[in-house]
Image (cartoon, one colour):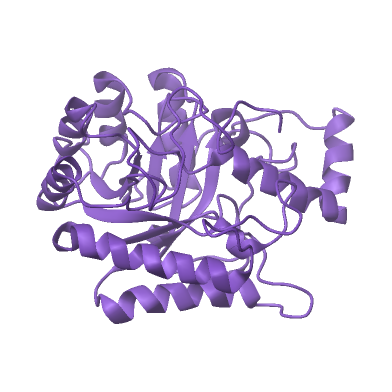
Length: 344
């Protein structure tokens, strides 16, 4: 989509570069714009996607948020992409670490689109505090869709070395995993793998991508028993991904897309075609949620969609993860995660 620079240059609040390059003052987000570009590519090559786009263009469907919602006693926990430089904004990290006991289950740390080139005292301090507060700290690792094609790069996105092959991406991801544990191991609880495709594999290798992520999951857990892994396709995935990670992000997008009818335009929330045994298999991330009324609507909707992990923010693109919501909003979000939060 024709949006401000998210990975091909600098933009306010977005910081790019190699994990092994010079230190930056922040980190890029979960690359939602590049993820949207990937989704558009998949939609264009799928006949069903084309049919949906035609029906949407006809005006037959409109955005809707059905109420009342069911499953409102679901035991949710908040899972926060904390792409916040602690050297520049220690107060926001204090706000996060000071969240109600048990309300925040996961925190994703992103130094520089990965672990950075060396451990820093600022990051060591906040990750230690988050871990000590009972939050599971996950290190961010980019996987570039394992080199699968997209409109951003028809031959696949390149690794830092310029190689777009699946093996190169797997090797880079494993190297970043090793660095996260080398730099922050005592306070690290696992790894967050970003930019995953929503396809099991290719025509010739039907489970190629799902198997690749299962291999990364095994790599982490063999070296670090007890580690937790999360994988971010950002949209619904087939059951082939069930064992690819402990937690799957099956929605990452805007308030408008989350509350749209499932048959609406590309990007709208789509339910899974299979049912996980544990709701904490599923994580929904929704940005651009203006005000507490919309936040409460999204929280209720996420419960009805059986998302055991959720994060809702009023922050916007190009980086919706460089701050936390305002204190009253954030406090209310914790309450709405009941029964882990305060029932009020």
